Image 1 (cartoon, rainbow, N blue to C red):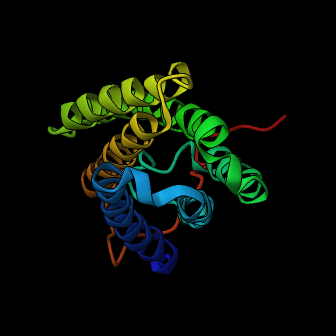
Image 2: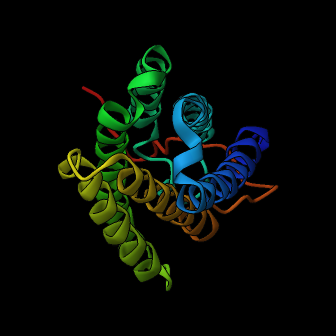
Length: 196
């Protein structure tokens, strides 16, 4: 029987981080003028923690192998971006919004692929991941192309991007990660294979 602790850890981590992303996004939307340098520190720490959950998810070998399939590389990317952001928290508006925009655009594109894989797999709510991935990618693109729009507007767009990213990850993990307590470990069936 497979150890389900890594799967459960990754799924719970995804859910918690999704909720925190949404909450942080709402705060950025409501109080853009008060976030300043603290937002850079919170952003750096948040994406590094999320990167850890992504890496754990990749190695958890969940039943469907959908939600976490790209999470090793993306988790490492989030760790690197988190370190970069934490070394430049004062350059928040000019620099960090572009970095986060690239990360969220990339995640949106990867989740589009996951949604199409989910459709092929027979998951009926695959379209919800697709729609949210497109929206997340669009908001991430806005962050990349809008560095001259003024800091308050940029922080609000950043807030919207955290909200869409949080909702996207929550939907993805809820529909594509199934934890089966008595799931058997992966085996290779070598019957009928001739080795010469």
